[in-house]
Length: 288
Image (cartoon, rainbow, N blue to C red; front, side, top):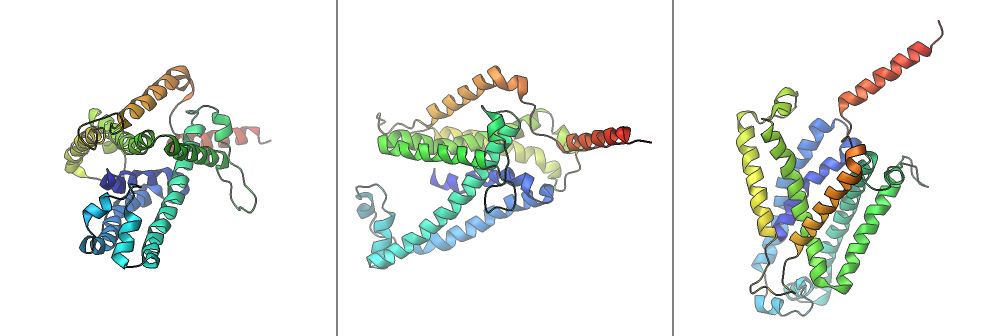
């Protein structure tokens, strides 16, 4: 599960597409470069830890279940050194939290704009907060942040339930990546062949897409399995239950509301047609 987190969210870069110049070129570059950059930086950080790793039994005996602080203290030989190493992790976590919150707020705003969420009118509002120079999806940001805080509070009541919610994002992201690829394969990749994309896989497109879908399907099954055997009520992996629950809620909401209002994200040609229609209206209204 932990290695999967490293590469599970690279597609969330697409959430920032509407705030990037020339996204058709820049976003694929960002997604592609995130893999080698993450691999190299991860190796630079992990290799010293691997060569200086303390006794594993000592780390496993930590009552909190989070041995990273003890590990850094033993490696550095002092509490100050251990805190310094832990502070690096804390800083990385803060940067990750900022990027995750930003991407989540943009995804929330996009769904609200397309009327795919309850109370879409409120959460799709974009306004300029104090001390800001540009309009921002503040309401969508507050919604996504509130949900994150509430999910964090679950840990105070049940670590098992918290682990279920923590594990399900990898499954959801994997499913969200696999579905459009599977639909494209089912349609014979006609849309991709017809469009003038800046990056093309050519004849390798079909086998790469097939491998991607099969791998994600296999990974989702693995992520639903319990981590230890024998399985008890406490060690059971409930991520699959949460995943099915969210899927059921989404299906019900689509039947009740989405199919009447949700048309999908706007396409570039839609914007061109809208601009041309506005131009025609202005010409018609212009006095001769």
